Length: 95
Image (cartoon, rainbow, N blue to C red):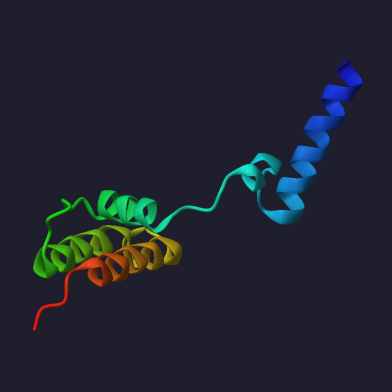
């Protein structure tokens, strides 16, 4: 039993190292757009009724905190940019 458990742990670690994901991550369905929008709102700390100006201001504040010159990473800046773009795409078209 112990050998089987150690084998499972070894395979899991090998999968994480080789593929960058844990084996159980492949069992989850891909996130839906509504989940992505929810996460973007949470990351930027804006409400569901936020307008363009609020989204841009929240993005500006977040990027100021996570910029590489301030101890953040490029990945964090890219994540903030993606959240901003997603939320701006969700806004209704204004003529």
